[in-house]
Amino acid sequence: MFQQLETMSASRHGRLCLRKVADYRFAGAISQVPLMFNEMREASRHFPIVFPAASPQRPVAILGDSDGINRFVDESGRWTAGYLPAFIRKYPFALAPQEARDGQHAVLIDPKAPHFSVEEGEPLFDGQSVVTQGSVAEAIAFLKRFQKEANAVPGHFQALTDSGVLIERHLDLRKDGKVARRITGVCLVNRDRLTSLSDATLANWARSGLLEAVHAHWMSLSNFHRLIN
Image (tube, rainbow, N blue to C red; front, side, top):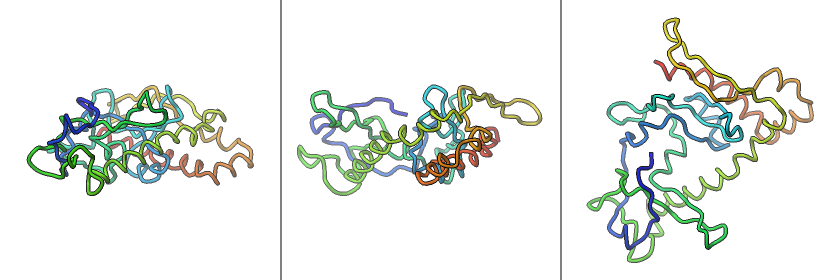
């Protein structure tokens, strides 16, 4: 999705303006995106949600498969799902840690993104300073909220790994009686293992929202058909 990341600065990007775009072809080759804890319910209505075997504490929404095609972006660049994940909404901005400033982050941009123009939109800078109101300020504020929530995700889902309810699977997606695609390297929450947990554990998960997230994960699995239709 990101073609080129640069630290946002007045010297390099002082002429750039941020504009609204409705063309999502920039995300056309994204086959999965990380989800925030508070996205699970809404995302489950539109995408299959799994836990990567390599990083099971970070759930992802599957948008395509190994062919590198996002099934939710059509040929005209229209986003066809009813929900747009926060990971895509934050584009074309990103954050990177600043080595000299512990806990501080620099704002990065993809200057090649269609969101930027020198002819229309809201300027990124007012002189040497980043603008503090309007769409640019809102985008940067959203980016910082996203980063905070992303940092918290593993803590929300660590209990799934610790309790042993995740099982690695490969998933065969069938069409017309044949395997059309295979999804590998993913984990699913096993119902039998979950229901064998103690009442106290399940009560804790219910209070924390984790149990609701697990049910959203299960519900989302019915969306795999959208990847082949």
